[in-house]
Image (cartoon, rainbow, N blue to C red; front, side):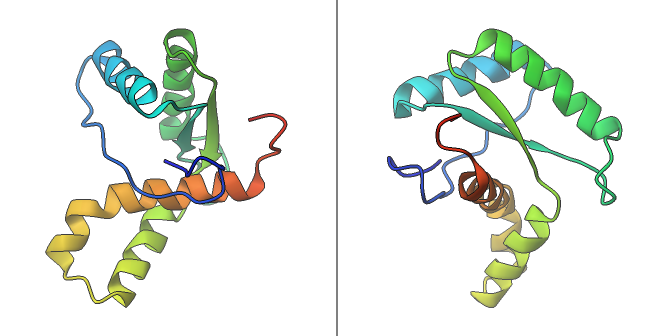
Length: 125
């Protein structure tokens, strides 16, 4: 989640995936409502070469579902290397491996969102 000015990203929570995308999207909508969110940014798992593989195609399909059900715009952003970056920063902070595993997804999401915030055209947000 970003600060109110849309400049700084910080970890919020991880929505545990279920077999029912509708329920997952409902939880996301609850977070949108609770935190008065302007838009949602979804990580796009491109291959290291930048190509759209099976994981990215699946993400694109889910983004279409989210766009149809959520009350705010849904954007995608390249998430390559975000987990690596998150782990490296936690290692530099001397976090133990067990602690890193518990929060790596939150930190990686914040890294990805920060990249989006740094590159987004504020007029299109």
